[in-house]
Image (cartoon, rainbow, N blue to C red; front, side, top):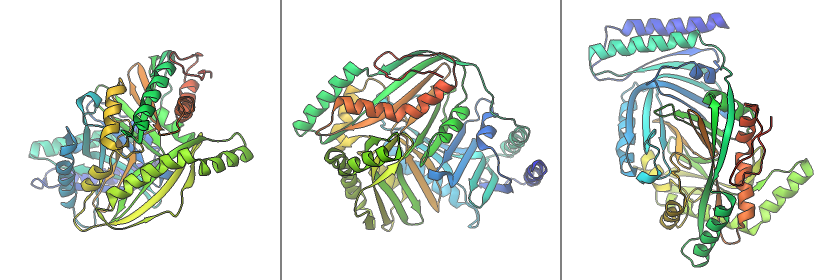
Length: 472
């Protein structure tokens, strides 16, 4: 296997060497080579050079895994109004390749473009084409390089930079274990503030101002030592099922990562698929209890109402841009490791002229993460949540000319040197109980909290009402 990897890397480097003195004027060039299966997270972990941002995204089930190192081209978005310009620029760039070669860009967008809601290390959003890309599908693995330069000097510099990156990938090692110990934990809001917040939301719902609002909680840990986002992701994937997974690097050593169960959209050609995922119950301890809880969820009026609000919101938005829509006859259950959700699946065919940016602007953020009506729910969130959601409850994924797929960025965490914050949300509708919604928030962060506990030695409680001990 090792000799096969070396051969594949050598073949790619030979192709790059032949391009050193052959810069095409302003044109994107993609060089790729099949490679044996690689430990992609470990490949990313060993890339330590500042300024070479890294990204990782896997679709539900891991049928497509894409990783990127550094950037060949990028477009930073300041607000929602930049989405059409950025998406068109990415599409034009990828269309310049030969018809038998396809490239894909990474992208993420925040929950809101209000300045108070944006994390400065990431901005509102970004679309970029990686300089080096590793991808895995059911048919094999591909190592690719994307080259774009405005001068001969930049062209040669880019090729030499790629060679250095490839060499480091070739001599890489496993993800290191580092010293890591949590020393402080805070929950925002705490249980008392949460009860007051839910009470206020229910008053808005009873008055008719809102039908639903999704409130979130942030659990922030401060720690000594360091912890690898790639190590966390590896463990998170191993303890999860039926999820998308992602890691994005911002500036100042800030990482955003998560394992989300929710699809925003998938487009293959002109066919799209999405889903209404809302309404939650915990998993049972045994098969009989699990089936009983699932049956109760399937018939629970409060959760069905919450799910239908999301479904109707998505249908109303897609009907205007699709030739046809096909919706499941009834809701079903999506079972995850710690929770289970009600789900409706939706498919459709895009109307002529409708592009990815039209879909994203129309349906993001859905009422599954914001609320209904959208403007009123977002105002309530902005007025009452005293922290920036940033990329939490935003969207992330890959953009291609033939296929685009985005996940909703929930079940996620923000990692900085010395601190990590976990995010979860719960939909408040008529009939919601602050106690049961609080428990739901905790179920949704149970997997990542268990991982953090396993990575450190101390036993820790959390101020603000966190009910689990972090015991190894």
